[in-house]
Length: 277
Image (cartoon, rainbow, N blue to C red; front, side):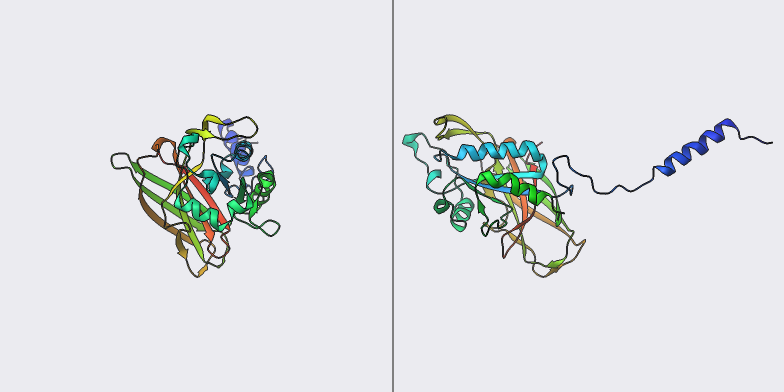
């Protein structure tokens, strides 16, 4: 009886092992309870440095960030009377922006009373405006859904003239009639300024994060992606250029890009990238 050489037998065993392991994995389940590795959620936190209840909303955003990590993106929108500059009271930093003012007016932030927020601008119980106590449940609901699209970002920042060149790639996972706009904004972290706090008293060296600074795309509502039907797998490659204001610290800035339905304003997907390494 003939026998196989030992080295040939070893090769056959190895081949059978690798063949047995050649399987395609299904969607991974996130330990936080949601599926869909590319789905992300946007919280827009309407706030103000003279709003004494607003630090509680900031704390909620930090807590949710520790839970959801990169799947959660926050923009702090300083708007309304609580965001006014009042130097003689120590509130000397200008946080308000034209875009923030328009969003605050559109969503009746002053009338609703700060702090309030939006979670993907989706309606919950008849309104997209909600209190921070609801943000966690709403984020979980969004992140449990399969993503409608993917956003990939790449940027080049030139410190010599503070020019930003942003490349945005979109890929759709769903089909349907489209009236979608893309919005790209600059946010800034680690801004040290005074903040009122009704629980602990005002803090002169409060760290303001996720602060909306300016828009890269057109105005408040951005630029059209496509005005008619979008197909599964359809891709777009879009480029934008802007100049960073000299008042902003480039090393603390990020670019946030989201696509929203221009009729309902609901956010379909969002992504974030640091401006500098």
